[in-house]
Image (cartoon, rainbow, N blue to C red):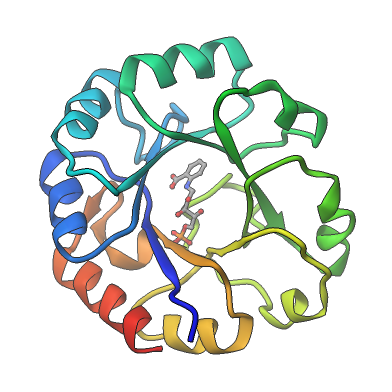
Amino acid sequence: MAVTRVKICGITNMDDAQGAVAAGADALGFVFHPASPRYVEPEAVADMVAALPPFVATVGLFVNMPAVKIHQIMVQTGLQLIQLHGDETAADCHLHPPYSVIKALRVRDEHSLNRLDDYPVAALLLDAWSDEHYGGSGRQFDWQLVRRATLNKPLILAGGLNPANVATAIQLVKPYAVDVSSGVEREPGHKDLTLVAQFIEQVRMA
Ligand SMILES: O=C(O)c1ccccc1NCC(=O)[C@H](O)[C@H](O)COP(=O)(O)O
């Protein structure tokens, strides 16, 4: 049986970073989109990254930010992977050596899943469509659409996941990893570490 990895996204503080890792998170995500309630300053992320144990993947999330600025933040923070969570094209994904790139796509309907192979990335993250938010909306999309899509890259499933629905999502979609933000929060930007532990337990049992 394949192991499903867990990424806890929208980490803004040291307690949540260390608590998520203690609960078994495989990866942490840090949002650098200034309009997000989960925005975190690069200086704070650098401190968190330096305090983490080895073998935890660290991911910076960017929305339509110029590559030069992204790379400045990556160097300043010591983060490992870039997640492009805006309107970046497949061509934009070429701009980030030596970093591995995760491209997030927001799924509105079956057309959202056309030409996924065009993206030169390490993994694709599928999230729910929202007119108001680039991410962290807490919305779920139709998982059946993924079952019908052709995907030759590791898939990270996101969007409205929580401890109550993540096992069903894994059984249906069989993703490489699951990603959660608002479903394990007590308020935007602050994780509920009991929910984080329950989420990871559900993933391990799925
Ligand atoms: O979380 C945000 O506020 C955010 C803002 C801008 C771009 C991306 C953002 N989050 C992306 C994530 O990786 C979330 O984990 C993903 O959208 C799922 O969110 P949720 O439905 O709340 O679990």
